[in-house]
View 1 (cartoon, rainbow, N blue to C red):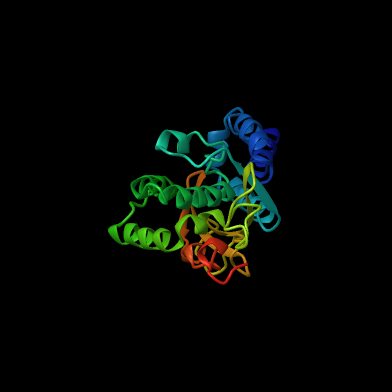
View 2 (view 1 turned 60 degrees about the horizontal axis):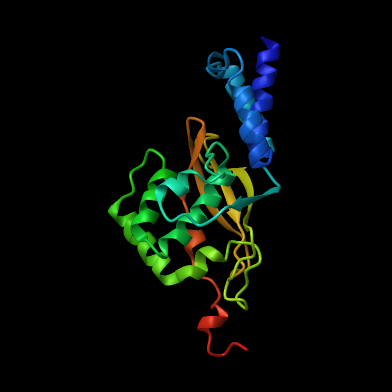
Amino acid sequence: MKLKVGLFLLGVVSLVCMPNAVHAQFGRSVLNYGNANRIINSSTVRKEVNKIVNTAMSGGSTDIVIEKIPENMDEFMALKAMNLSNPRNTGALFVVMLCAGVKDLNLAYEMMDVLNGPKDLSNYERQFLRDRIGAGGAYLGNSYFKGTSPKNSYTPSLPLTITVYGAQPQAGYPSSDYCRIALSSSGADSKRHIMMRRKGNNWYVWDYPAVVSGIRTAAAEDPWSD
């Protein structure tokens, strides 16, 4: 029994801390070990899991590579980052949604429905996303990729890479099912946060206004730029 619990806890840490390709393969094998589902239901183990996850998620950063900006939902669901058991992946996919929405708002809404989890996307949220994506254009989402700057009109380097920081358990919230990740925009002076909420094994977007705030004007849109 101790061996099973130890392996399960190790799997949880792997899901949070390991690079995507490694934790996707290694984490699944550990979580499927033996009677893992029965172990998860233990309140004692649950507390220990939360303690380890909170410690593991408290700092550091992860570079998440996005193969391409999807043009349909099949491509979106096929991205390697589509593993919502890690809140950093959810944050990176939010940026992907912003970029996809520049060409196809309805596609962005469908993507956001996935990232929203069990909560339906309201008409207000659709309007909010439409306004923010419309105001930021291609520059807003692109500003979160490596290699971008206002001077190069937020043109990302390849492969498309997003650095995600955190995630940190959020003080003042009722349980460890809430956490906060941070993204760095090359058009802003400080990191911007997304609040996440956990449902089952997955983390979903809970609150995100900071990430869709305005950024510095791209050179292509600035008549005073050299």
